[in-house]
Length: 163
Image (cartoon, rainbow, N blue to C red; front, side, top):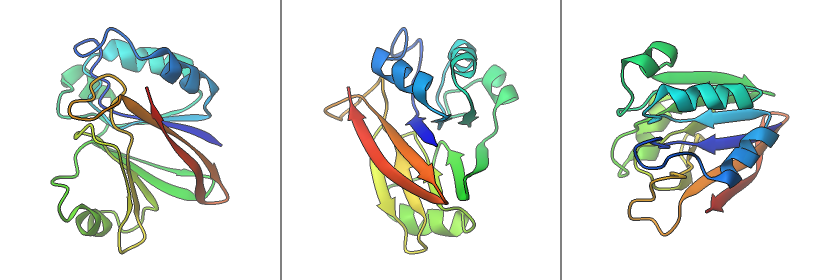
């Protein structure tokens, strides 16, 4: 099962559209994961139309129209892998321990908000992933998103794509 992970797209405020490389990955994926800060419903509509399956939450920059269609935390099980998607996880300091306690029944937590790519494992075994932003890199050297593969309850072949 092929995954695309993205967040903090901020379309159309930070960019008019997603980068072509990300759209190509979305078209090829079995599951698209978006961890919030869409900004406009039109991007949600476009990704829903082009993706086979979308797992997504809203972020702090998402207004009532997006919040009406998305949840604060999205949960899914993909081929035995227990997944949660949330926008904000708080400060980087202590994140692994804090999220491990908050999400004890999850294998992978995808989050956003900081626009900083992140891949760590909590003492509890929870893997925390932030794909960065494909449209607003802030202090990062590149715009980014991630792809991965899920098989038999495991996450494999994780790649951070630099745009």
